[in-house]
Image (spheres, rainbow, N blue to C red):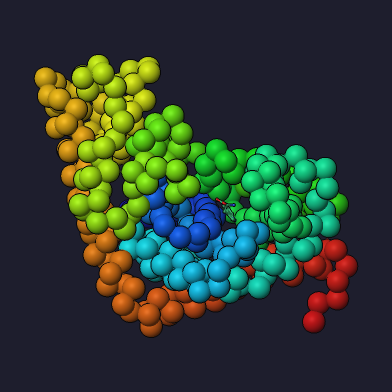
Length: 348
Ligand code: TRP
């Protein structure tokens, strides 16, 4: 009697299985000192995406040596970033989270892709032009071919989507071009990845110069909040944030400082701009700045506590990144082998 109903149930279960979750790949450079901008703009989305998509995340340590690093500091940065990402909610049970240099397929595919990437294409990358202007004494070949390593990171995992900020969009476009070129020669080897621009995700500006992005290279230390700043320091920096002479908490053109504080407050509390304007109606900037500072302190408190616990447990961290690397190798090796076979290498 229930035959048709049962059939429908079975069909639904089957189609759910067939409809694989979309795969997301992303990576960041562990360059030390995660900022509130990195956290609200990128990392918080990484954490959220874990529920909706199949995510694979990495620390792109190979990318960091395009600029000279101090060895002890580099090691400390990698370990700190790994623990901090877990503390923020990257869950290694849900999403493989690994260190790029632990998975040899990345450097190998990057070499192959270098041979399918044109000198002219790499020369047009704005990041290359900016960085070579900034480090004129060390314009090394790695800085130049950085985008083919990034392409390898992405293409190895057959990622459907890559969450990227504006500064990495051009690299993702190049990744797509390289993949299409390769597929054009050898058939379907690489999935062509799409850029994923998260719906929400604050673009956090400097507290001192609210027309430029919050950045650790900010010349004024008060412009940049670090996720590991102490509550006192965070409050102090917010109290000193640049505002305007309008003395009214509202979102409007030309009120860059207040707009920035409002979007930080909104991103942390989930309140809309209208709600924020109502909450601070008739109140001064002093009250508002303190409220934003306190909200940020509360948002970061559990992260800082988790970070403290995790950094004390080296064995656990090691187990997580070893597992992540093992999984990542298993997935990426399939793509690397396929690409090598198509090119004409003899596989062992
Ligand atoms: N180049 C990126 C950055 O500096 C980091 C990165 C390396 C990356 N490999 C990636 C980002 C793959 C997305 C996908 O921010």
